[in-house]
Image (cartoon, rainbow, N blue to C red; front, side, top):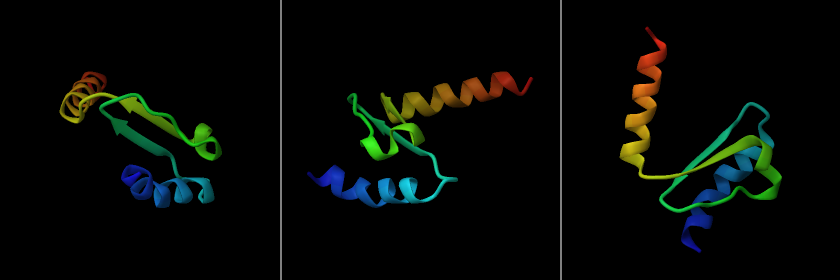
Length: 63
Protein backbone atom coordinates (compact mmCIF):
# COMPACT_ATOMS: atom_id res chain seq x y z
CA UNK A 1 0.00 0.00 0.00
CA UNK A 2 2.79 2.46 0.82
CA UNK A 3 4.26 2.72 -2.72
CA UNK A 4 0.85 3.71 -4.10
CA UNK A 5 0.48 6.42 -1.47
CA UNK A 6 3.86 7.84 -2.46
CA UNK A 7 3.14 7.62 -6.20
CA UNK A 8 -0.41 9.01 -6.11
CA UNK A 9 0.56 12.74 -6.14
CA UNK A 10 2.92 12.13 -9.06
CA UNK A 11 0.22 10.25 -10.98
CA UNK A 12 -2.13 13.20 -10.43
CA UNK A 13 0.47 15.70 -11.65
CA UNK A 14 1.16 13.62 -14.75
CA UNK A 15 -2.56 13.40 -15.50
CA UNK A 16 -3.28 17.11 -15.02
CA UNK A 17 -0.24 18.58 -16.79
CA UNK A 18 0.10 17.91 -20.51
CA UNK A 19 3.85 18.66 -20.37
CA UNK A 20 4.58 16.01 -17.74
CA UNK A 21 5.86 12.52 -18.56
CA UNK A 22 5.91 9.99 -15.72
CA UNK A 23 8.85 7.60 -15.37
CA UNK A 24 8.98 4.83 -12.79
CA UNK A 25 11.78 2.40 -12.03
CA UNK A 26 11.01 -0.70 -9.97
CA UNK A 27 13.03 -3.81 -9.28
CA UNK A 28 10.02 -5.86 -10.38
CA UNK A 29 7.64 -5.36 -13.28
CA UNK A 30 4.86 -2.84 -12.68
CA UNK A 31 2.26 -1.00 -14.70
CA UNK A 32 0.87 2.49 -15.01
CA UNK A 33 -2.63 3.42 -13.88
CA UNK A 34 -5.08 3.61 -16.79
CA UNK A 35 -5.41 7.41 -16.66
CA UNK A 36 -1.68 7.96 -17.39
CA UNK A 37 -0.83 4.86 -19.45
CA UNK A 38 0.06 6.98 -22.50
CA UNK A 39 2.05 9.53 -20.47
CA UNK A 40 4.51 7.29 -18.71
CA UNK A 41 7.11 4.58 -18.82
CA UNK A 42 7.70 1.77 -16.36
CA UNK A 43 11.15 0.22 -16.24
CA UNK A 44 11.94 -2.97 -14.36
CA UNK A 45 15.51 -3.12 -13.15
CA UNK A 46 18.20 -2.08 -10.74
CA UNK A 47 18.62 1.70 -10.40
CA UNK A 48 22.44 1.67 -10.50
CA UNK A 49 22.54 -0.59 -13.56
CA UNK A 50 19.85 1.38 -15.35
CA UNK A 51 21.59 4.72 -14.76
CA UNK A 52 24.95 3.25 -15.87
CA UNK A 53 23.36 1.92 -19.07
CA UNK A 54 21.63 5.24 -19.71
CA UNK A 55 24.88 7.15 -19.20
CA UNK A 56 26.72 4.84 -21.61
CA UNK A 57 23.95 5.17 -24.18
CA UNK A 58 23.95 8.97 -23.99
CA UNK A 59 27.76 9.14 -24.14
CA UNK A 60 27.74 6.98 -27.27
CA UNK A 61 25.32 9.33 -29.03
CA UNK A 62 27.36 12.47 -28.26
CA UNK A 63 30.24 11.33 -30.44
